[in-house]
Amino acid sequence: MLWKTLPPCPSRVPRLGVAAAATALLAGCTMGWVRPNTTAEQTRSDNAECQISAAGKYPPNVIRAGSLAPGEPSIDTDANELLRDEEAKYCMRQRGYTYGRGR
Image: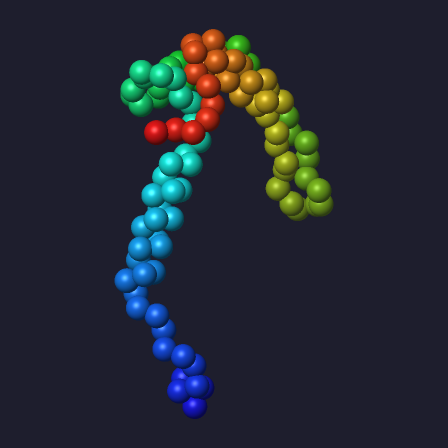
């Protein structure tokens, strides 16, 4: 029988320790907008204002490119998506934020 030839599994305790350590490390690697002495709520508010402002300057401009084959769904693209994203990033940088490791 195969199960008799395999070595016993190690204890679950060390696995839990490794899992906890990995979780703690990954939590510190979250990327996002950061600015010294700024709360998460303020960051969310500033980001929302920048997104709204960018959408006002570069509203969605959906271009219907057609489908690749008859009967397939149409491929749509927003011609302003990149401009809108860059404008929102610029706005956040103007407010003193950098994009990097979050809290």
